[in-house]
Length: 288
Ligand code: NAP
Image 1 (cartoon, protein in one colour):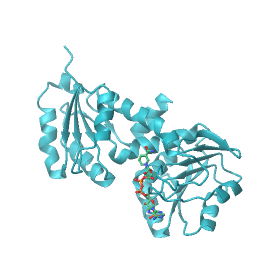
Image 2 (cartoon, protein in one colour):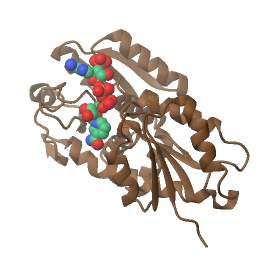
Image 3 (tube, protein in one colour):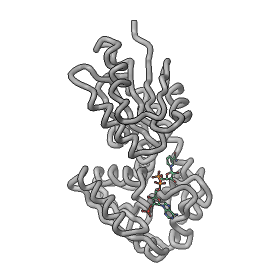
Image 4 (cartoon, protein in one colour):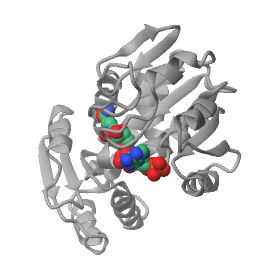
């Protein structure tokens, strides 16, 4: 008889994310075990509890989800989780702290609907945050050239360096966007712009958007007014505006949710999956 599906939710925040829990249940998880305020040194015992309770042939019915609001902490928890595994003694694990992997995947998939990514130029405004950084990683892996923008050139360069470490062949360049004329220059000639700035921060004006003739797709991931790209509605999904296909945060959010649920379901197909940005993106490609 198939064992019941158990998802172990590891979250570094004081309360384990309700959002992540609801998605888990909606994805068919039968038992959700939630752990909050999880510190890296506590991971081993928690994961051992998951690994050593069922026979290897039943371990595909146990999985780990690493979430919470802090992506850097989530990455460290994921590292600690994977360190516990050996031989067949492992369970599948998904990292989606702050929705960063599923959101970046959904944004890049939206862009891919309108532009051949290989050979395209994409500008990621405020690309230094976890979502922008992942979108950049996915785009360079697909053969796009990325201009990664930040208010400070040094921060942009540091982020580009992190991406080059993971993807040595990455075509990526840092760009400083301290003014709207800098932003106009950063998107001039690009086919894709993704605004990945913090909530409630406008990064691109309608005026500059209108003047940029090369753009084919513009994606804003900020759902909190003022939105990241002026003139794009939060619900927009492939809405055409002067020849540019536009997406708002909730417009992208539908695909994000679909990928999140599918990623949880996928965890229970085998016991050796580690789903980070690239794997989540590949799953999204199968869905859209
Ligand atoms: P974040 O880390 O909060 O911010 C990203 C970047 O925004 C920062 O690295 C910073 O870049 C820039 N920034 C911060 N404050 C700013 C200010 N006052 N003025 C101008 N730029 C500023 O963002 P994130 O967690 O990566 O998320 C990116 C966006 O995606 C957010 O709007 C978030 O709400 C949204 N999101 C959406 C979903 C969804 O389902 N649709 C899911 C997750 C996240 P520099 O310092 O380098 O300029």
